[in-house]
Image 1: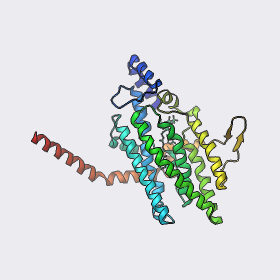
Image 2: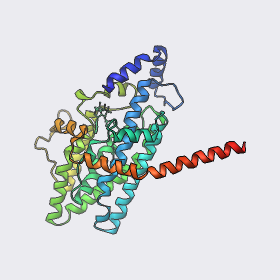
Image 3: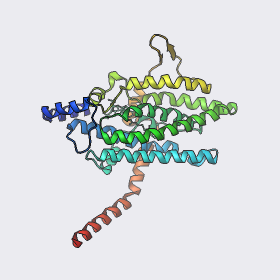
Image 4: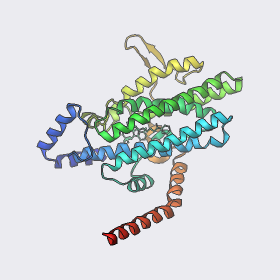
Length: 325
Ligand code: BYC
């Protein structure tokens, strides 16, 4: 439905302007907020950047769950810093989306009433401390794989936000891997917990890259506009290829009996995720969708007094300024 909407919006644009826009994209120019852009380009960016921002904010919840139960002061400080970074990423991304003419409040309302999504991964629970390792290692690892190319995305504010986000994600990934290292070098029970966390996180992490290319609705237009730089399957393959040796280093087993090195392609062959589960999760039926959205709804409701106070203060200030002119 969204693809149809984008298409019909696109047909409303002046063909000469559309062609000139495509020339700029093909030449690798950055598009800035005040530049002319096709309505479909603007809407696609609001969808993707907004969804990305929501993911950062909702993504704080599964890890926030473990801050008070981190096993040492150092682990607690690291996790706290990581979760705070995610809030910062959400803010840069909301700001980038706001340059496209949508307010943060509107995006939040769209998240809460189901018109906007957030990453499927955050609809899974974090059951043990080892999940903090697996999330940092795999979820932030997948995020980096997806976001490094987005530093070259065609929309300037989004590309620039990605530069800082990627730097911080590298720290996040390392702190996760460090936790996994400690667990696998611990006692038998700790190693079992690390393997269990990998078993539960592997496929949800592969799903983060989106549906397989044949089912990706937006990829071809988004790639033509350089909003996306790679297809979902390209990035998923790259992630598998880079992560398998890391799991071997940890002495852990990727939960995929079909995983084999393919000499001919120079890549690992792997078993696809269960796509029915993916579509179920993004339709609101994952294990934690209700909890995640109710936490966001509560934060929104609890913050109403502050939004009202800020609006009243801004109105007062504007009136005062007018009177002083
Ligand atoms: N989850 O046509 P497709 C993080 C939807 S935050 C949910 O391939 P597209 C972190 C898609 O929206 C990580 N929905 O879509 C934070 C579309 O539905 P609609 C977040 C998904 O946009 C805190 C439909 O499926 N990263 O790392 O071309 C702590 C068809 O898909 C998902 C970003 O957001 C999904 N996984 O490609 C730790 C990166 N996948 O909208 C870590 C930026 C697909 O038509 N986003 N859908 O209703 C992207 O690169 C792209 O949007 C995607 C999907 C690759 C995710």
